[in-house]
Every structure is written in structure tokens, then in C-alpha cells.
Image (tube, rainbow, N blue to C red; front, top):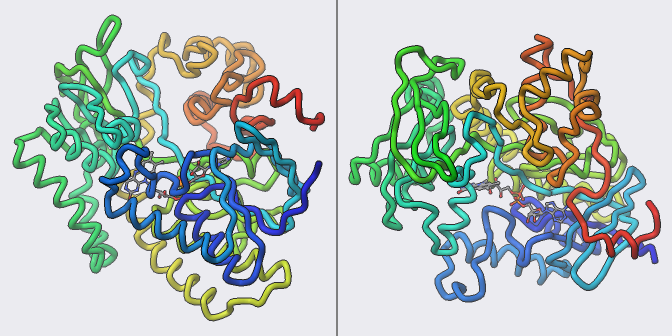
Length: 460
Ligand SMILES: Cc1cc2nc3c(=O)[nH]c(=O)nc-3n(C[C@H](O)[C@H](O)[C@H](O)COP(=O)(O)OP(=O)(O)OC[C@H]3O[C@@H](n4cnc5c(N)ncnc54)[C@H](O)[C@@H]3O)c2cc1C
């Protein structure tokens, strides 16, 4: 039966919990739905039960935020995946035991981000994993490999390199594709005052110096080698566009490769609902168009945090508060004028740091040109770059035409892994900039579902 709920927040990360708290403090009835077993999202991800005693400061802060929300009257439902959402603000969610069909009077999407997949020869070999996956294993006290190469860009590389060293791994190298030190000079005013962040970066860097781990900027991975498992990699110096410089190639031995090319918004629900989208390289790719109150083009639907554009944890919390206050005020609750003004001021100053991060850590176009004809671009459906080229030769000229010709984007991940790869490939061959309206059309379910769940749900 369709339930009527006042404010529904999808996602219990930094943005979702902040949004829920703000809306509840304004007097709204708020329900948060989250797919993870405990609230916290990525940044405040809670440890498994058996490691609760060893919770870190960050995990304790996350717990505090979620308890604050609960004390303000917010209901949080975990292990609850929202797999359908439409333009009338109707959503369908499932837990192991229940299915919820809800009409939300206001809906706040705070669904976070995931790591940008980049295809290169050998990227599907066992032993190649995302840096964040290595981080998750380390959180569970599992060492992902013995001799590890990290390649890509972004501060997460350094953070995970430090964790790997602390846990006893050997580093074959840490490759940062961007010339960060050179570029950072132009951002000195924006870095001023960011002492906590600078200290975290420095601590990781000093650990690497201490262990004499090879850290190189302006370098990247070109190919992973191995038969049934990673045995090594070819690396090269990169030019400013991330294209390997001829003659600089080197071979390194390693059993594990962590690739991390930054984050992209997980924005499937707003796309599925039909909210207007735009392409914004600086925010990570396809993002919902929002007004000053973070409302999307669909009335009563707000988007906050990394899912609406990569901004980091502080920006996510600020945006969460703005969306929460505005969603509640939009339903007639008392406007929190002062608190909202303050949050918007913080948003402006945090945007300076957001731009800095994107300038320092966005991969250049050369990263998307490494795939050979045999490289899989869509892993789920086994679509190689050669198959894409054949489809283009048969006159496929849009993402949707490539999808129907090759089945790319139709597999289990629903295009999350291959979409940006296919998009950049199309951009290269057509020499046309990306058009956000021509990307994959997303249909429910957002994630794969057991067939009995669909059987229990009236046709949508
Ligand atoms: C893999 C990874 C590692 C990171 N590591 C660091 C780090 O070391 N240091 C750092 O400063 N920042 C890190 N970040 C960035 C930081 O985590 C984010 O900036 C911050 O968590 C953003 O908050 P958010 O609330 O927007 O999203 P998140 O914290 O990601 O929360 C999103 C929540 O939405 C839920 N969700 C998504 N879709 C659905 C759905 N359909 N149904 C139900 N629930 C859903 C998810 O379960 C999740 O709990 C990392 C980000 C990622 C993705």
C-alpha cells in the first residue's frame, strides 16, 4: 500500500544525516532510507560489530551525528535500498523483510559517489582494484596485497598508501598523474587555514618518505601485466594532458594495483526521475541542475552532497543542511532563516576548496585513451573497444545507439562502470563535447534485485 511520508531522505551519509537533522529541527517528520547496514555513508562508515571497540575518531563523530538525528525524531531505516523513483516523488524501497512504496511530500537525494572507473589494458585482471576497495579491506583489517602499486590521482591515494604501509605492505610505487606541487602554488590563498587537511596530507607523505616509498607526480599506469593475476605493470611519465611521454616507459613488479581516479556522483535516482541534468567536469560528470536552495528541476526534490557534485565531506554536510531547511520550509514549516543564511555563506567559502581539489586532481583526457582494441570497456556485457568501434562504423553515434548495438551499459552495474568510458570514447571519435542529454537513459531498478521482489511489487 502506498504510504504518505513527509520528508524522505535517500542516503544516511554526511549529507543525508545533516539534511535529516535540519529538516527535523525545522519541525518536519523525517525518514532516512539507506542501503548500508549502519548509518554513516562512506566517510563515517561504521566498523563491523566485532571491531566496535576500536572505532576511530571519525567513526565516533559519525555515530554522534546519527544519534543527534535520532534524538531530533528522525527515523532511520538501514539495509534499505531505494530502487525506483519517479517524477511524482514516489519511491519504492526494499529491505530483506519489507517493501516500502512511498509518496514523499519532499524528497532529498543524498546518495553519495563512487570511484571513477578508467579502462586500460589489463584493468580487469584479478589483483587490480579500486583504491577505495583497498581502503574498505584495510578497515576490516585485511591486507589487499603484499607489493602494491597505486596509480591515479587524488588525496585518497596518499591516505591509502599510508594505511598500506602501516599494515605492513610494501609499495611498488605511488603514482599521482597530476603535477600537484606545481599546480598547488596557484592555490596558496585557498589553502591558507586548511590546517587539518594539510596535516593529514603531510602525515601520509612523511610516512612514505620514512619508508622510502617511491612517490612520483606526473606519472601514471599504462598497462597491467599478468596471466591469471597481476604480476607487474608498465608505468610512464605523463604530459599535462595525461598522455604517456614516449621513451619514459618502465616496468615494475607488483601483485596488486590500486587505481583511483577521483570520484563521480552516484546520481542514478535523479536521472531515473527525469530531473534535468548537466555535464560538469569540475563536479565529477553528470549532475542534477539545482537552484540556490538545492532543489532540482522537479518541485520538492532536492539533491545534496557528493551525489549532486563532488565536494567532499564538509561541503556535503553544508549542502545537507541547506536542503533539509529548504525542504521543510517548502512544506510550510518555520523557515530557519539565520541558520540557512549561515549555511549558504559556508557553502560559498567551501566552494573555493572544492575548485582547488578539482583543479589539482582531475584526470586529463589521456587517461581515457589508454584502452587497446581488446580492452573491455563494459565488463558486465563483455564489450571491448573494438566492438564500440564496429558499432560506430555501423553509424551508432550516440550513447543510446551504442547501447542498443553492443549492449554496453545493460549489465548488472546498470552502466555505472562503463558509462564515462563509453562517453569519453564517443567524444574522442566524434570530436564533439559531452552532451548530458545524450547519456544512458536509466530505468528501474537502480541496482539488481531478486526476482521475487519484483513479483511482490505492482507493475511500475
Ligand atoms: C569510496 C570512497 C572513499 C572515500 N574516502 C575518503 C577519505 O578517506 N577521506 C575523505 O575525506 N573523504 C573520502 N571520501 C569522500 C567522502 O566520503 C564524501 O565526500 C562524503 O562521504 C560525502 O557524503 P554524502 O553523504 O554525499 O555521501 P556518502 O557518505 O557516500 O553517503 C551516501 C549514502 O547513500 C546511500 N545510498 C546511495 N544510493 C542509495 C539507494 N538507492 N538506496 C538507499 N541508500 C542509498 C549509501 O548507502 C550511502 O550510505 C570517500 C568517498 C568514497 C566514495
